[in-house]
Image (tube, rainbow, N blue to C red; front, side):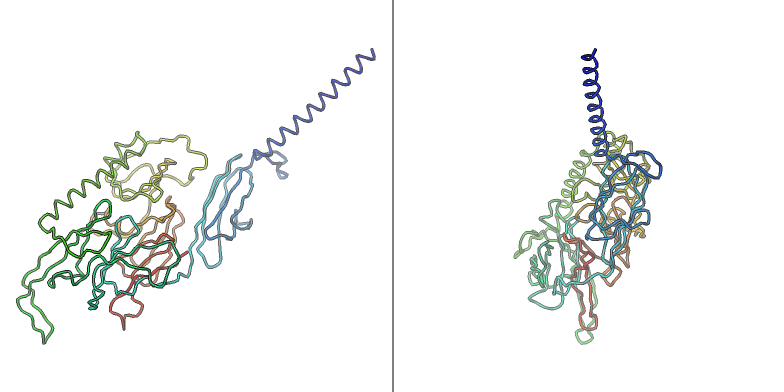
Length: 429
């Protein structure tokens, strides 16, 4: 009998130890998976983690109006909806409403911009015209100030390295290499798909009568002349292509259509036909994961990933397409967002061409910039957090974005002395 009692005690002790071990193990696993005791409700609820980062760093983090620390930080919270606000003195604020799920780590990346932009000169040429080379950060500059040694066409390539006083320019065409009858300021550009060549088209004026004393001229005829140039080096001798210009541009256009079709082929098969029939692709984000396009007709984008990926953007989508509207599609997350551009279109120019000029991607692919005429704004790719980042002086026909996230504009800060402006970096970071 005693043996039976001793055996029962040993078994009972082992069962208790095993039970305690299993309880501790389950508690550790539950804690690691984000379950916490909620003293207010008296229950154990699942929690998630908000990983909140900002650029620049050391910004204040508010959750539901309560200060919860500074970025970059991880905050554990019960599942539910939260209003997140990121603030830093001297910078724009950033806000987002998120729905946090239990056992999930959600990353939130806030980009905030300086409220007091700085200006840094990038050239000292005297710029008559500036043109961005399509969806690159390279810029063509036209300078005609009467300086025979400097007048011409230049290529400006911004760099991520520390800015020198005047970063080097690549001279493409000297004005002295052009006929005297050419109007240098009238230069128009068509770029090859690989951005290594361009066609320059100028107006030429035939003047039958010039009154030098009154500095007036009577223009009897006006025509154009075109040249094919390389963008890789200086063009000592120009190759005229006036007669074959349209054929060259047509071939370039066909190549660009082929490139657009390759982009469409990377989209989900379920709506490749919709994309080819209803999309006018404007540009692809630098990371090639997002697509900005103009809807040519009404349509509906079918869901490809359903349910959505864990951690995907929670901003309300716009999958019912409306003709004439601009959208951004995230290929990785299968999300489609309507972008409110908030500027009037010129009826004499194609909408897609205007959007390509006025809307540009930021290097990180999370933001775009919009030229609104008298100011420049930024907005997240999902259409949220729109902020005016620059409302100072600039030539309204041009702006671009450098690899370091700053704006590039043409400004004449002293028009009483200088007839022409120059290229400046606007420090909004």
